[in-house]
Image 1: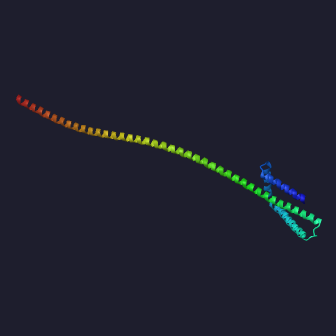
Image 2 (image 1 turned 180 degrees about the vertical axis):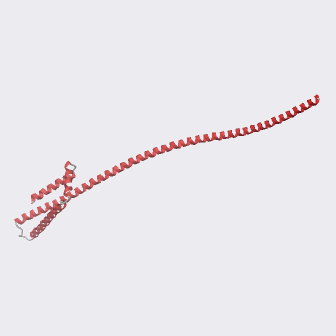
Image 3 (image 1 turned 180 degrees about the horizontal axis):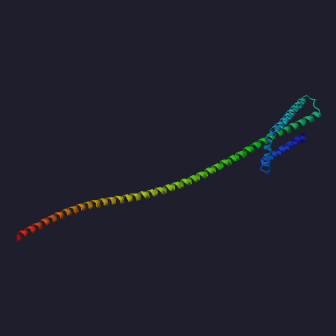
Length: 221
């Protein structure tokens, strides 16, 4: 019994040491404990722990019985003393086994929680990096769009100035065409007046020529 208890204690201490330090065997121990906590493993562990706890309670009750006998003088013999020492050793070893088992279970639990926390932190860091990259990309796209907008604004200003210049040219051409139209109308009026004057002069010349012809005919008679 004592050899079995010492074997369990040394095994638990070895597992605890492997869990405390980062060694290649640490992953194997964690995987083994993970498998032990699956399926029927928890039932077996609970059964073993309950058995040890029952034996511990029994040993404690025996120790209390021996202590009560010590109160009465002459009731303790060497055999009882040996049994008392054996029960005290068994109780200490079983209590130490339960304590190491609880410590081992908590270490395994905290290591798993730490691994999950690290994975979560890595995922959060990756998301933050992707978000920063997307933000930088969007800022670059925003800058490119701003540059394109500025280029379009300058192009619009150039087109507006060209349109203004063309509008001024059209207005000047319209004013010139209006002036030429008025000038052509004046020339047409002047031409009509000259035609009328020419007609009147022709009629006057014809009348004068007719008068001269009549005077010459009278002289010849």
